[in-house]
Image 1: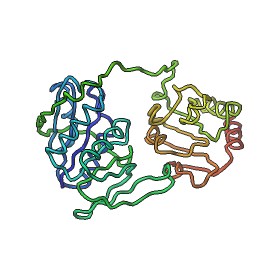
Image 2: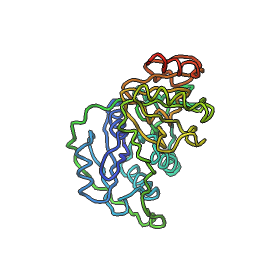
Image 3: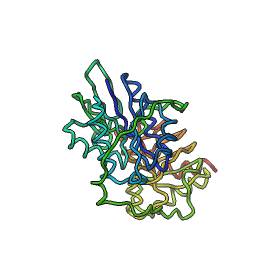
Length: 314
């Protein structure tokens, strides 16, 4: 079986999700090819040195210096046509979602998203994926050739030992992408906050109800020497500044302690914190998907537990 993996990177720094995809591809057996789109051959070579693949399929063009959907979609579609892989793997990320639907339409292949596991039995693939915000797991038989969009953290990538895969150039006509151009990167206003460096984080979710209850979580955070953070609904409601958002559209964190109160555990949030050393979840809904990810969890009223924990810490 031939597998093509879309490699995401920012200025030559390979995304964690790309290494996870390669590990998943290896677990399925067969030939693994990595598609690298970058601004020049030097950047391609640097990225290729990090990848555990049998072959690196490379497209080097100044148009690819920044992510432009039309250009990357053209590259992926051309690679699929030329290499004819049985399976294409993409990360569940902004770019991955962007590309997957377009290339599925172009190629006529069936696609499964939100995948957490892929099992192979000969020529048959069974894909486990999240549905209803992770509250249920669906099992789908995917006919090949197919496309799978994989959730971050679905498989643990091994220690990166580097790669020595040969690089094969793919010639792609990118003139069609000239109608869209990258203007600039706008960085969010951090307000002096860097959650990526925090060793302890207390995160609140929609169940908090409003800013009037925020002091309960902030008091516990002070006792723990932790930063306060929020899920996207909390940020969208204006209860906390955007710099304190954890998740797919916020910040990806890896603290030693990640304590959540009232966070359901949607896939978008899990993407931002699933690598935390210790995850503790407080939620009144015993079916909340976060309990499947947390190391410790309690079905409780967080408005009773938060002040009790704060008092216990003295």
